[in-house]
Every structure is written in C-alpha cells, then in structure tokens.
Image 1 (spheres, helix red, strand yellow):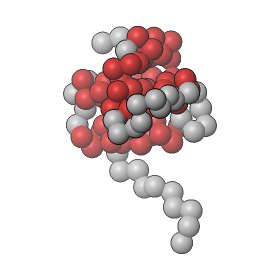
Image 2 (tube, rainbow, N blue to C red; image 1 turned 135 degrees about the vertical axis):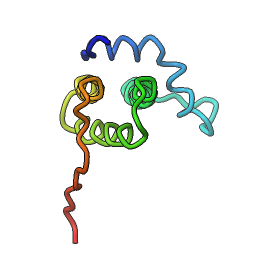
Image 3 (cartoon, rainbow, N blue to C red; image 1 turned 30 degrees about the horizontal axis):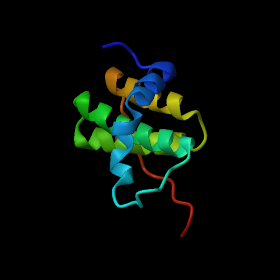
Image 4 (tube, rainbow, N blue to C red; image 1 turned 90 degrees about the vertical axis):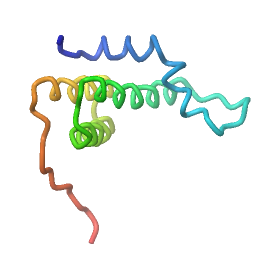
Length: 105
C-alpha cells in the first residue's frame, strides 16, 4: 500500500464530501447550512474512521489513532495529522499503552 500524504488525503475527502458529511446533517433543520471549514473538518473525521476500518485496524488501534488525530489536529495541519496517523498503521507503529496527561485533580 502506498503511503498517505496530506494532498491525497484532502483530495479523497473533497471528492466525497457530501456523502461523508451526511451523517452530521441528521436531525438538523432543513435549511441549516454549515460553513465550509466545518464541513471539511467533520468529513475528514468520518473519512479517517472509515479508512482506518478499511485498513483492517483493530478496534483498539482505531480508537488510539482517532484520539491521536484529535489531539494533533488542534495544533498541527489536519491533513498532515490524518496522513501521519494512517501511515503509522501501515508501518505497524501504533502507540500502545499511552497514559493520558491529566491536568486537573
């Protein structure tokens, strides 16, 4: 399998954005319309989850990589973060046993 890079990840998400975004629309008013950045970000999250499943990730690895993407996407480029998480799955280097940092209490 070829490695993922940010440009191909973005191209794949943008090519199928309406189908990917459809679950987010459920229960919203008919005339509701999100801004383009929200639509891209939500669609990327759904695409990443589907792609991890397609790659045959175990449920634990899929949750680990989704959580890692959510952490990294707050600081770094979302497309690079998604590509990096998928490449770790391909390389077999998914971090196991990570202890979350707790800030309070």
